[in-house]
Image (cartoon, rainbow, N blue to C red; front, side, top):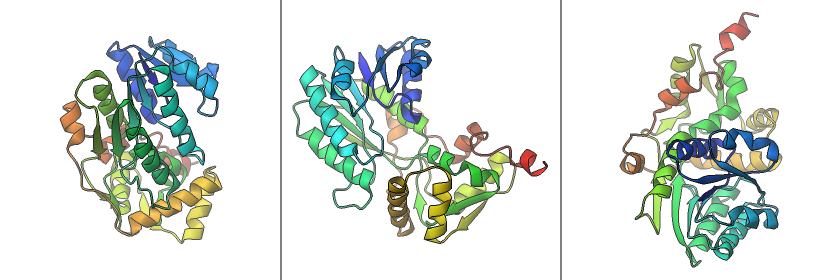
Length: 292
């Protein structure tokens, strides 16, 4: 039995679908019981659990042999990671597959990247088998900018910086393999998409997929903050994003890797494929709105 944390997120939901499809026993951890149905109807177990509730988390882990550990980017992230790892050891879980980040670094100003680095070190010090994946930024992060994209604008402050964005579905496919195969203990895998893309490159691909022009517009930082705030993001999250954008603008990226294809047998999805698949979520209704 595998306990899937983050089951209702982009990676977790797809992972649950893949495990159910492969008839792999899995238990989806949800924050409330109203979320159970989407997992039980595809043949998985569902259990209530919250990283902020140790007793719930401990109960969710009982009877599981593996843990897929994915924590949300919140101020308590490092604390929740340590708690989950400790409880996994306590409850007899044999192996943890953990989602870290390609930019994990103990000295970074990006809080979730620092939390990931701390958690990686902590996990490696514990008497439990582990596998760590370090993906780059998710293509699905562009959902946060769906409103301006629908108006034909892709706001950014990353200059000519590039990232090898990865589709979260490819991350889930890798994790499915890691949870069902032997031989990955003690491995750290860097996961990327097939290409390093600038925001201008992204705008071009969105234009082609959505059927309306999308322009990359470089904003002043204060205007970018307002744009993000209008999307309902917290001040803490916005501050962290601004720090991360600064790294990208400064030229941070990692080389593209072949890990997705090597581990799954399939090449990672291109951004063009992603945009076509999620054209509704990315603002494909722009033309109908503009005619109203």
